[in-house]
Image (tube, rainbow, N blue to C red):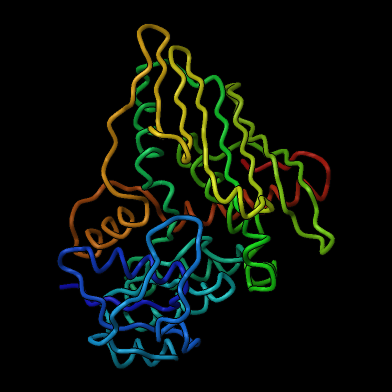
Length: 339
């Protein structure tokens, strides 16, 4: 039985709680949040995707307000770090130093230097560090990787990814709206697609980005072209200034020589493959969502089971590096080399 702790009990902490509770062979033994309302159940998480709503029963769970006390007294085998982004590095490193395996939410950190410190702490401790780039595990995206890499429909001609949310409206005045704490739209939202593009196609040679700048100097909307030397056109668009009535949406469109693969989160069915010969059809995908599948992968990893490599700390760090280059490209008004 894996004894699990969760540090941070907002929307994402509740999502991890839901996933861990549903996982056979795992027990949520302890929770930690500095906000007493969150732990008492009145602070219901509000996020982009359903799954973390409702009250939770904490009668058999040890509750702490200090993560170090949780590590020392509850002695978990593994911990989910689901605190605001600016705290990721500090609490991940503390957990690793306490001998605990860590699943840290994305983005890995706010700076490349902090990301390096996290990787060094993991290497020194000998414990598993997994970053929650859940889109790599999302069934439709996982199927897209499988189809593209199979080569069954030829080479990729173009690939477009989009991700939109109403975060700027819904989270106004919270830590999300402070780029020093969240990393802003690029690190909090858009990095999902930046990371998946790296996962699907490798590290781009360069990025060229254009963005809408907020009065505070942050970015509310971004469009990036990722240059690859084989000539395929890869772009991603992200923005979190959508109206509350629009809500959240994620999409991709991958054009191959002999098929088009289309995904829209608000459409039923969400995934559609349109071959050059024959009728369009719905590819079979795995059950579950990216959150539950990444936690299952993490659990199998720390149990020592043989699992495919889906995400490494180094890859999560590289996604930070690419996202940072995208912000730099907007500031400079030119492309920025990566590889």
